[in-house]
Amino acid sequence: MSNASTTPVRRQAWAALDQHRRHIGDAHMRQMFEDDPNRFERFSLEDCGILLDYSKNRITSETLRLLLDLARGSQVESWRQRMFAGRPINFTEGRAVLHVALRNRSGRSFEVDGQDVMPQVQAVLEQMGRFCEAVRSRRWKGHSGKSIREVVNLGIGGSDLGPAMVCQALKPYADGPRVHFVSNVDGTHITETLKDLDPERTLFIVSSKSFTTQETLANARAARAWLLDRMGDESAIASHFAAVSTHEEAVRDFGIDPANMFEFWDWVGGRFSLWSAIGLSIALSLGMDRFQQLLEGAHRMDEHFRTRPLDRNMPVILALLGVWYRNFLGAASYAVVPYDQYLRRLPAYLQQLDMESNGKRIDRRGCRVKWDTGPVVWGEPGTNGQHAFFQLLHQGSQWVPADFILAARSHNPVGEQHRMLLANGVAQTEALMRGKSEQEVRREMEEQGLDRERLEALLPHRVFPGNRPTNTLLVDRITPETLGALLALYEHKIFVQGIIWDINSFDQWGVELGKQLASTVLEELRGRPAPRQHDGSTRALIDRLRKGFSSS
Ligand code: F6P
Image 1 (tube, rainbow, N blue to C red):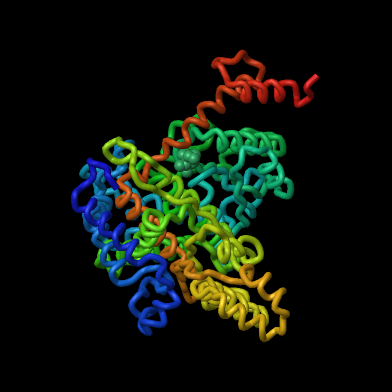
Image 2: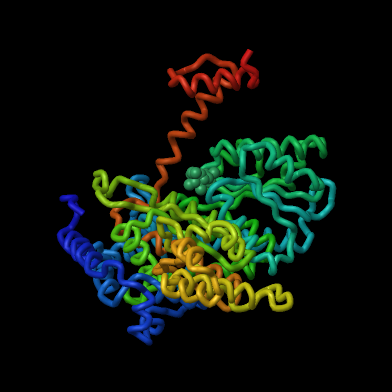
């Protein structure tokens, strides 16, 4: 790391870690476990209903000490304090980053520009509570006097992924109307969703922080047309549409009654917004009490993050391990593998949370960073992933650190299947760590009686290098509280990494260019003249599409 703009302390810590990397070389975790019978005790933490086992990582106590030096040199503690104090740490947009206020249970105030935001947070939670009670108790009637059975959230990115993932993850607790999520501008998404719905019993929630997002507004217009077509009366909108936004005027312009609008604020980033009224679909599905439990779990993790020393701090430890692999051992991606079918949307949610936050290359002073930043995040639930990409995890030419998420108890015990699921999850972390040496493979094949020629030919293919790191996050059961804590853990991990990488984790300028160009291409697809010159490929594609594919 040679960037002159960075602090000397950070430069030193970085150089020391670089040295250490050479020293630790290819030291094998298998050996580390053999040398230290207390490795699990030393490298695990438990709080907020989560046991974090990080002993299967390519680290020693010295690695951790140096990584903690890097965190201190990067002033993680003071940045953490600035975030909780409502300072405008999202400096490119001049905004505070205060999603922690949305789940604050401490009685402390949270100030933005000298004003406590807690009364507004509380007021919106109460409004959500009243609305949910009315809909869930069937007191809220649609235009024709029938109660609501179906809720459709229209939103994209943070206004979709968080609530959709949570509703899926906490399905065993769902006892309200059925919830559906439409995000894609592809008309198939809304068409397929509305196919089986009864308009008289359907409530739409238009969820958009900005209320300008093309996809969401297009789907909202389609939903309105569908409703009016079947109900035939403009006044039906009032009892079938609600909105969640920071922009009351835009909501009013769309024709939604501001009485059905739930506010949130520009100090809540889109990808951190499920804790705000963007979580309305969650509250409608599970009830307000369970939504509050989700917030409670997240708050417990906020307190853990805020008060625990760095070396006993779960988000900090996870962040430092990620930095170790990304910047010193060269891992370009990292996988999240929940051994829980209900968590199947978690990897997609974490993709936005992590990649939209830390997929940046400009530091806080506006210079090109000289080190790697956010990794590619991906994953699928176990055991499905085992039959898809685990081959690469075990024997690929690149190695991928992974988080394994396991719940001791299932919501759906079927025979011995949950034990089988857990056995697979635990065994995979062991296999990735231990591997299988040439000697072990040879012995195994000799015992199987393979002839020498066949044995020698197969031997290299059957060796597992091991030394592939995993974290295991173990909870008793996926409940609103444990899920809240788990999600806050990842939020704070990403925050710490952004501080160490010296980037702004809270803007997302990288999504703008594509949006801009799409609006000019759209004009051309509508048959209007090209407002800009295009390259040969883009021009040819537009031409073909204007002709409806046929080239003649
Ligand atoms: O993809 C960019 C983005 O701005 C995300 O950050 C955000 O979550 C999403 O679009 C949706 O934005 P909005 O809630 O304003 O419709």
